[in-house]
Length: 160
Image 1 (tube, helix red, strand yellow):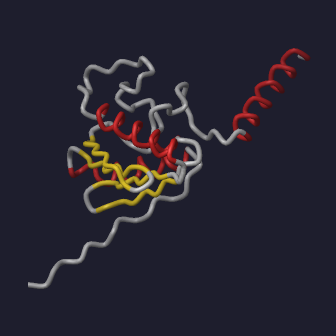
Image 2 (image 1 turned 30 degrees about the vertical axis):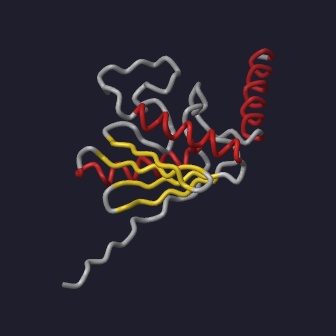
Image 3 (image 1 turned 45 degrees about the vertical axis):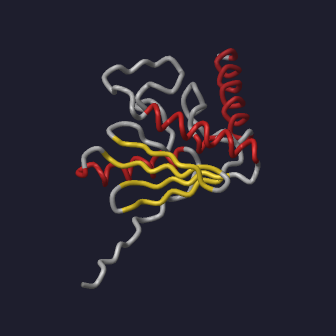
């Protein structure tokens, strides 16, 4: 019984320590390829009429470079054959096990440089999955300690 209590105490201490270190990421790789997981990065997620826009920025030049590197990586990973999933820790597992806000499953991902970081546009491959993509992105953001995702931008029709 005593050993059980000691073991539980050590597990609880480890969980508290990870939370105190500010690492809200989940999974064994700790989202090492996710641009939103760069320490100190500012992430703004906006639902759009046809996808999700994720802006990740930092005032620190080295962190900006890391954000851009990771954004390119997830954009490239999204193009890989989803039937050839390899869970090797190199970021090409298809995103099914990951918790990065950049959803790779059944999406197209485009990353472009912006001031201080990257803008990542994620769109579902099938328009019927738009609501799912919005919810999945918000769920992942909440799991990582982020704030609620902004609602879709209202698009006004131009007058004829």
